[in-house]
Image (cartoon, rainbow, N blue to C red; front, side, top):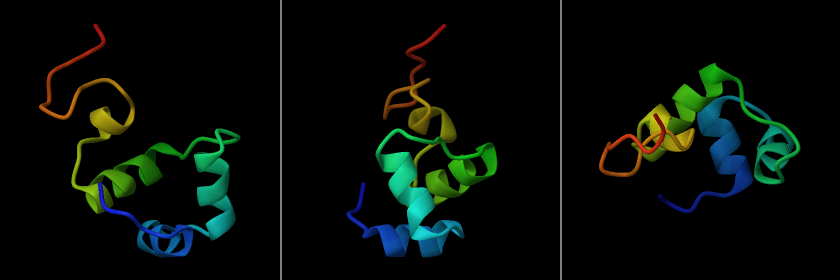
Length: 62
């Protein structure tokens, strides 16, 4: 994944920087719509971001 600042990521996803900080610090989790946007930004699947599949697309949870 590419390195982005909180401000850059927030702009790409459509949230403020405090939301990104809360996600990074495990205080809050992004809504499903933001997970979808994050997947687009990082060119991965939503399932990968949620820990359901690995980078190759194989399921790691039943």
